Image (tube, rainbow, N blue to C red; front, side, top):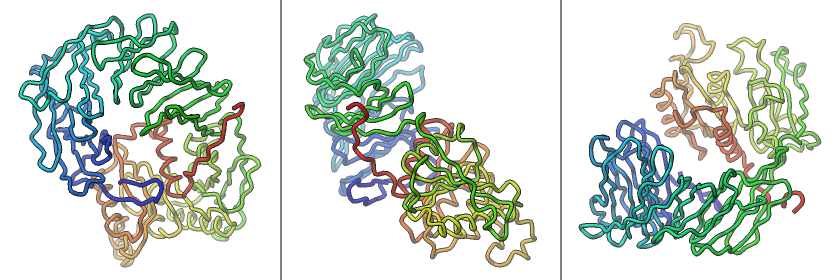
Length: 524
């Protein structure tokens, strides 16, 4: 899906025709095409149009899943490495795109060696430079070659062997200029648009160098934790001092800006958005360590049918519950100290968590209890901006509720779904009635329903084909606009920080809670 930030308009740019899923995606500099590396025994690359309605998709067969995917000439050409038997000569391929895209052509060949690693970087501007670097098993530079994209249209591209500099390569980065980051007892940066030129170094050899490229400049973390912008000539163009006790943790290029994620030793977090020659924008997140939670049990005596069930409402201490906060509903009961990162992020964004205790509820009554809990939240004035489900337990009951009462839930993350049989329904099929004659989740699907946003994450033991069919049926039948999708493999550890951040982003997106506020961090 392509989503426009300002208008919220969404459009489909690619639909899977088989069971393969994207491993990597990279947008072209002109934002007209997306390169998608597809999983499978042959990891094909699909160059699919995003905003150019006249462009045709191009499929590059049998790509190397570990190779670079490089846009050049502003997005009008593409470089990649096809998959080859290690015993054969390795190749780089180049394709020129347009109304009549030409077949890919070979622009470089080399002999494979098990102790050597090849890294390639491409300048994104028109007729930029492609740099090819070989390193040994310990990361030391062995070979540097470069070629101008203008020569790729010729029958024999011209590759220039460059002087090899001493040191271990850490990063090879390119935008409008190409930078080589080395470790050689010192932290060094070399510019490689022509013969290698050392443009920066310091004596902080034991400190990791955090850097990102934007245009013809590179941002690095210098001494005292300051961030420095250095141009391709080695001139320091800008210095940004982070707030007291903050240190840069990650630097990422975001369009024409650089996004810096900062931390403190006490758990403080924040972002600095940097742009050439401008004052930084500060986005601060509350510190996890300074965030006390308040939990209160409610509802044990207000549900007439199931008095054994309970609902624990968790919020940030001192937060006023005015009904505007989205609610994260879950049947998973954990102590506050063990709270998943996605839950902490939900609370930090001003949301409410409702932990539903169904340990003493029979499996056949769980769906009814979930419905009573949702209705009770609405009566109490909670969740008017949305109720989202986080389900890593009782998954079948949650899915059944989503399909029976889709209008009451905004979105759900469901991880692991062993089968699609209705939970707790042990009656013979003939006694179940027309609604659930088949005894599975498919029988609950209806054409006139607007289904909630759904992220279904399949585990290794799940039936992936059945999950795909269920998601496809929901997408086909829904009257609503919320997305339903499935993942497998890309979420190797759903409890990891990266995975939890993705889960949180999805649920916040579906409940309208992604409006960050620009707030200067303390001391700034």
